Image 1: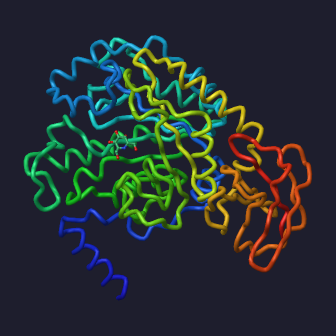
Image 2 (image 1 turned 30 degrees about the horizontal axis):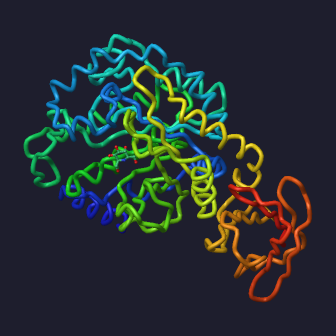
Image 3 (image 1 turned 120 degrees about the vertical axis):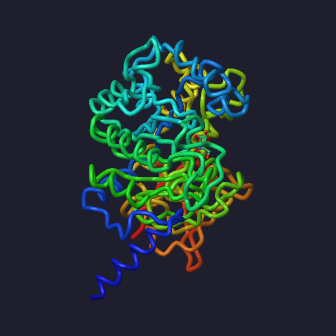
Length: 435
Ligand code: FHN
């Protein structure tokens, strides 16, 4: 009886239309999904790739919208998008060399162009460009071969499709000038292709929810479909809100969890799901020929360390060039980052954030009985103080050399003495054994 009442109430709710907050109802992740989540948290460092036909204009992925290029004119870009230099092997090798364990790539961005061979629209890289090949299939196969996990970014927002009807008023959860049912079906069909055709996919990264706050995105059906097709796949949504039912990880954009320098995170309270934060290597997501605001290897390492200390993965974005090559500024910087991660990976991979909150001097990560003290800002005084450490420290050494480090534990916390400590310009790591 109780169950029937619940079903009736749910039916009524579903019939009311506006359900931006509604997602997969009462979702319980499978054992396989929980394993994907754990592995995701262990990986810590991923490569985000924004790549599309907009790259030809060298002005980022929003160029169509920002330069007010009519959709039909913009579509011409497809007829000369021909990334002959694309080589999945090179991309995967580049990610591995940087110490990254997974790749999240745009399968379709807001311009609506599908960068994969879809049967659901002719506006895709195989059918609409002279390239006639599917780079995402090549990437998926190479990732699988090389043990790199693959996630697909998928835009909910579409500037061009008539059924999406960008700019249309929304009434009763639908755009009045579009065909919302058709658009939802289109997305489900494409997601089915992405999940069933491409080997090894472990995540779907939605974006664009924020464009239509009052629409019914049918997340209950979309998330339900993904988990039905492959229960182990992690669903995440860059809606800039607290996680919804049916989601498997929570993401932050251009901000560490808990910060809100961009204004995107005002409503995204940190939940209990695995966390990820994404940031650009320069100031652009898609290829931007004019953007020379390259982050240094030190800034990238600090972002990675600070994310790990806040229990989050770091997804670092690059925008490859329209010929399929990755520009040398990115490969050079990430080779340095990779060398650092190779040396210090013990304190990053497989760790979790500490109960000790971020301090002026840096952050801490934890793995089993080990606590890693990441000193990213060496203090003026010859010590750092770790407050609130509940465990008893039995040993303190420099990570890598094993040289012992002087420390003193008191009821209110632990002092680590930094005099004579070999300082790493990026991050001086002290490994504590603590029970
Ligand atoms: O509009 C997009 C943008 O192009 C890019 O894809 C980023 C990645 O986090 N997300 C959106 C803005 O929230």
